Image (cartoon, rainbow, N blue to C red):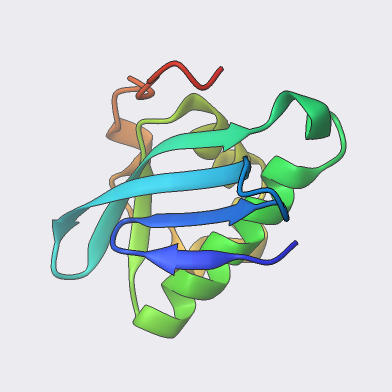
Length: 107
């Protein structure tokens, strides 16, 4: 997938401009972000695209020297399941994060 980066958003669109996958986040402070939404277009669900998007986020976090929390249930579970591999980008506060995934009609 071809990933694009915008302020507080990493996403991929197809050749027609349709959104295929997206991760949105907000900055908690200078060194942490909160991932509030992970979206995958219905035609790609079940094919590992959400996990691929999270790996792109991990690369972004490492490049920018950031750590992440997650109010998005998918992102929080993904970090929990992969904590041993990506502990360098997971905030110590992630265990206390309240899950409240932002839903804006894309599910």
